[in-house]
Length: 242
Image (tube, rainbow, N blue to C red; front, side, top):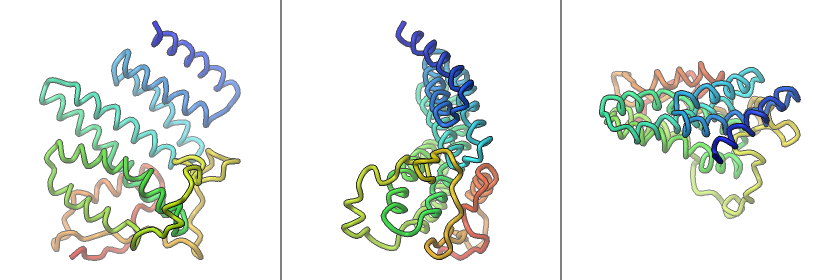
């Protein structure tokens, strides 16, 4: 009864927010409805609410928010795979979750390059990007994709800071980033992030050639991340990893 009441309240809130045109709050409402529907009616029904939230993000140019939605979608699909008894269906759902999670994780990590080097950028890497990468690694491990895991490890190691954060960064207050998925000032929480300031940001690292032949399983996911979220995940040049 409580779940049905919550579903009804969220439906009423959705209607009211659509009339008011409050996009950021409407996105959160749609995400909540997606979670509720996933529990009560199955993940396929919840997906329509997640897709509605993603469409709102894309329509306002908030591609960092679209990556967040896709990460949450992947998490729901991965959870449904763990609850599935049939091996073939479990593998199919994990592949679907990986197809969402990995490009989203790569994009979320890359959005951190919009910050100047320093505590906020390091906080983004540790608090925001890391959970998305963890989900991607979990799915890759469950699917036995060792080659992809190797490439993703190399990719992740090439994108971290050059050394330990100073004491000031370790003491960075919890509210230093207004919204973990918001790169804009609090006054405009749904605005798209600005391009990096060339005077204060390095921009994305180059792509890695992990094996001498240049073959890469990760390359398709990097391309998907750039295509889906309209940003440069890695620079155009390529360097050998070894």
